[in-house]
Amino acid sequence: MNVPDLNLLIALDALLAEASVAGAARRLGLSASAMSRTLSRLRATTGDPLLVRAGRHMVLTPHAEAIRERTQHTLFDTLTLLRPSPAELALST
Image (cartoon, rainbow, N blue to C red; front, side):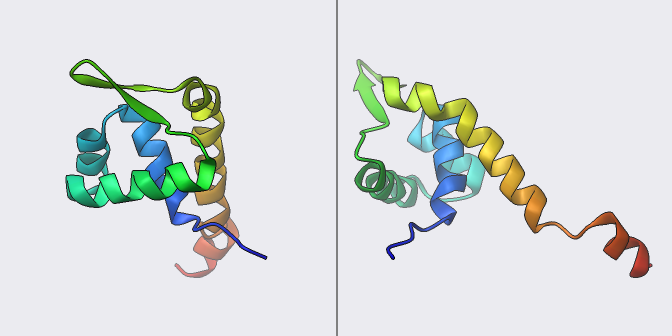
C-alpha cells in the first residue's frame, strides 16, 4: 500500500489558506523554495495544480477551492486525535 506523506496535509492547509507559496512558507517557518518543492509533491499526489498564476498572484484551482474547508477540518481533527486526552493530562499533574 502506498500511503501519502501525511505531513503534506499541514502544507496543503497552509497553501490553501494563504493562496501563496511565500505566505504558506512563512506560516510554517520554511523557505519559499522548500514550500515550492512541497507544492510540487502535492500536485503529483493530488493530480491537480492546486495553485496557478493569475497575473502577479496565485489563485486556487476549482479543485483546491472545493477541498479547502475539508482540508482545514481534517487537519484539525487529526491534530486533535494526536493530542493527549484530558484524562492523561490530569494524571500527569
